[in-house]
Amino acid sequence: MTHTDSLSEALRAISVSIEPIEEELKPHLDTVLVSLLEKKKDAAVEIARSGILPTLAQALASKSSLSCQVALVVAEMAREAAVREPCIEAGLVKVLLPHLNSNNQEMLLNTGRAIGRICFDNSHQQDLLVQSGVIPRLVSIMKEYPENDPLVNVCLLALCNLADMDLARESLEEQDVAGVLTFQLKRAPDAERRHVILEILGALGESDALKLQFAESGVPEALSAMIWDLQGGSDPHDLCSIKIASNLIVSLLLGDESMQRCFGEGSGVVYQDVLSWLQSSNTQLQLSGALAIANFARNDSNCVKMLDLGVVPHILTLLEQHVDEGDVSVQHAGLSALRNLAIPATNKVRMLEDGVTERIKTLLRSDMPPVQFKLLGTLRMMVDGQQEAALVLGRDAVLLARVMEWCEAKDHAGVRGEASRLLAAFIRHSRSPEVVQAVSTADGVRHLISMATSEHVIMQDEALVALAIATAIDLESMKDVFVEAKLLPVLKKILEDPVGAVEVQFSALGLICSLANSGVMKEELNSVNIRESLRKLTEHSSSKLASQASSLLLVLGDTS
Image (cartoon, rainbow, N blue to C red; front, side, top):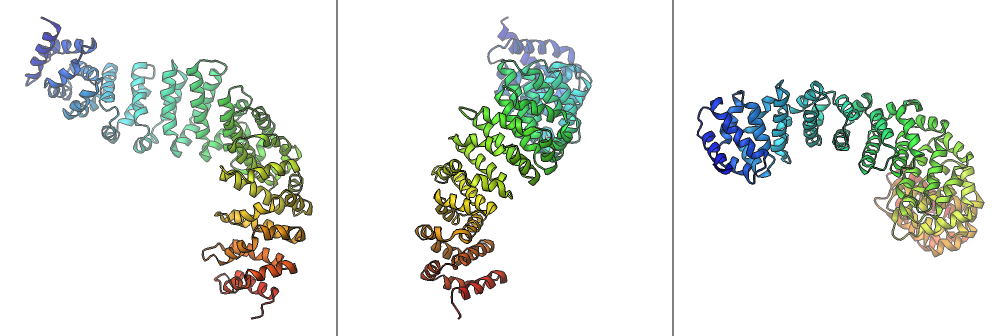
């Protein structure tokens, strides 16, 4: 009898069994299993079409001594995508699920593989699995049999397929999944197992509750230790593990509580390891290190502590390594870290004394818009509230020339906007005639006027305040450019905007008040009929705005 004949006979015998008798079924199941294990062509499809699936379901439901063998048959069949739907229709998933509570490890392995393969890439079935309570059981199995690698692998793959589901994450919040995954990560025999665990951690780390559980259970420390062990090699699988793990640590630091635990007042293991990443030769670790520092620098207390501990020189050295032909992402992340560290006023003073602005100015030659954007924002943060810094940088001809170029960056609105905001910041925070003169000489005033027409309220307001300060300091040298750049029509439009922000209109009035001190500019104001716009504002719902408009009318000689 050929193999095909013996399989057909076995299938007929199984399919006609009304009440499965174990002794009679076993040899036929053996034949079916041999066909599947030998990977005979189309064997799985033939078996599914033969009509034996209800009999297999019945055998599993009765929890007979054949259940383990039947589960193995189903698991081998379900390797073929074409038989998965028939398996579901025959109710095999439903009768397999109770066997996940078995204390027989072989039964657990066969059952896990069968369910995993049948439900692979089937979101509806996966939903049903989670609703049936499979998540806690998967965690329990790994706790009970942590050294059984095939069984652990089945549970990990199942979790990996389910971890993106909100219901699964909620279920895992009640389990010690962090401890289980950390243990398995430490004993992972190969990169493939590592990557599955890292993928699960990444998906679960989207939950704030699990972020905190991970931090409390030592997940970041375990990831950091793994990175430490893998550093220095060139194996692409190890480098991939380093990349995934370091990105994951950065992600876990987005949670405030988990970040604070990892920081540990500057003595946390993870924070210390992150500092070493900044000095690594691995570009991925440099990037993750800079991003992690930016995440740690989310509150003033941490920022001050990190400055005390000397993090800034490490970041500056890293940035300088990447100035020419360097990695744009690393530069961007390093500047983000510096910008966050410069937010507390005390840090600004210390960073300026340490020459930070001089060192980051080396990045002025960068031709990469993301770096330009972040550099401008960092410099703006450095001069915020710092008169001396604004005075020094605002008179720097080389810096101003580069900022002027970026004010005209046609292909990058973000760079253009940040460049204009930096000009405004120089004037607002220095209030210096020398800075006003330097910005005017560099042809920066027209960019401030253009900034006043921005769609962003904060940018409009900053531009108008800077122009008002510049006007109060040195109106004579600016009259011509104001006329050429059509400042007055811009102001008139701002005043007449029915949905304009009150603070912007108030700043516009402040600028008009400064302009009115010049006889020439007063004539120009009257020529665009600014008084008509002011009269309308005297009826504004903001009493402060209405009162200022009335006062200005008197200054402009309107006594009506």
